Length: 597
Image (tube, rainbow, N blue to C red; front, side, top):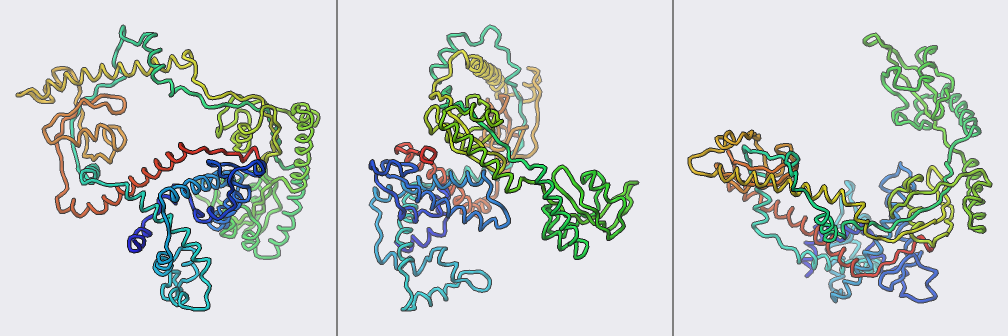
């Protein structure tokens, strides 16, 4: 058992990959409660009666945020990224609870011996980071020395490992459900390495005429009933919303210009490059603000105009630009093809709403929200304070809101609250929002009248495809008749014969993408064979194989292990995705995050 476990820890745990689980073991230790009336107000969701508390949800979100910041030390966590991390935290918890339930259902247990062996032979990455040599590699000898220290307390590590081993065992169980046959490996190798050349006749689908044989109204109605699930519209909402842009004011510009003057004084007295590194918000800050030689069109006209009176080494006055302010130092000039080019150093300071502006707008948003909550009339509350309300068109959950934009928090609110409910103040980097749910319509099939034209188009294409197939079948029958050639038959029927370059299934061919039906049909033949008809892209094809080069058996043998691993990993991924989807379908998952906020 432990030998297999050690081997499988070298493979990516697909459970972890699919679920983004960095805390699969930690979730089980959080405050997840069984249902109860006393907990109804203290929950962000429920999964089959297990209540997810705000504390558990926030703990996972905080871990994900910390990991993001650790991986992006120079970047800010934008509202869009925060939204992504919130969704990731929710998915982590859902997947981890479902995974934990499956561990229990399968009767997976952990013995003390397994914990001890795992600690000694497969220390978790969280522990390995504390035992690294001067090259950053895991120092196994130092780790073993620490393990043998009788005064060291390894209780927390034992708990961590005891919670992780079931995940490894479950991963082994899932991987054991996946098998790769020799025929799958051979097929995958052939699709990448068999080289083919072919001639073909194309029967364009759109060129086919079905006049007098098009679909009737009864055909359209029958297709609609047979495929009615395809015409379901998702639940939709309509909201009234106030959007309050967070925009810089003239006061903010005045403060920016004042600050820029102070920076300019430092730049004149000191090292311009060092000051640029410290204060500039341009990508050139990393190189001391130096741009290299640029033309007049590569910076704001006001900035380039300020260079006219400068000599090398001079620093310009503070230049006001639409986006903020700039200070430049001329390094050198040169002529190239009649154009004057400038090498400059720049300090770019961007104009943005200051704290006072944001605070003032926030106060106004809170006033509107409170007044709207008290009266139930968002439009009146907003209009009384000089703000307009827009009414959206119907939209589905998770989609951009017409007239407002893509604001996931607003979308969640629109589908979580009651009709007429007023949201809290929702904010991102650019706006404050307040919304009122005007209406929601449940999922339903679109009326036949709305989709009839689309169905008719589908049926017409099917009819045209079948018409092209009939012609292709007739051509193929003639092409395989003894004492005839592919080209002779094409000439007889007036068809053009095209020829491919060398291709494999995994490469484009005949203006078709990789892994096309055309290429796969060609792979089934050998030189002299005519194959088809095969519909691929916008045509039906009859293909004659004129050349085929298979890899040498020795080469195929060398490639088998790597291909087996690739096919296996792909199948494991697909199976785990299917496994999680099935668990979710069989579970009662309630997302109450917006309703509880």
